Amino acid sequence: MGYIKSQIKLIRKKDHAIKSALEVFLYPSFRALLYYKVAHFLYLRKHFFFSRYLSERAKRKTGIEIHPGATIGKDLFIDHGFGVVIGENAIIGDNVLIYHGVTLGATGKEEGKRHPTVLNDVVIGCGAKVLGNITIGNHAKIGANSVVLQDVSDDTTVVGIPAYKK
Image (cartoon, rainbow, N blue to C red):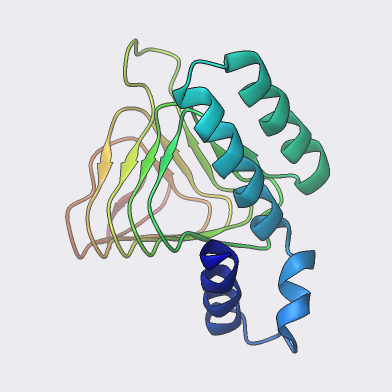
């Protein structure tokens, strides 16, 4: 129950359009992260089929795809959410804000750790693609529709295709 209360508080803080705590239950990101928590629990216990079944179900119901092998810190907020993809080896720190259409994916060239590590207090704009075994530093900002293929330092804003420091 503590998780649900913390999510209600987080969503009400981050989205000023919300008028009541009950609305949180309508949010696709809330439902996707609940599915993820159960799927991740199963994944860690090597119940791969059932964990993937839950993640696929969540994807169909919410439009948000989170691989059960991903590691997600506390207070992730996915605003709007549709089209968000978070890959198997992705690591997301605390207090990260992800807008719709974001991909934390692989380039197809790596083996082993193929997905990004996003540290704490990061904002990733709509449609951004963060690809490969790279690290996005603390307090970094990724501009909308940017394609990030290299590490981003702490306290840095990057934009463009490919993304560069602003």
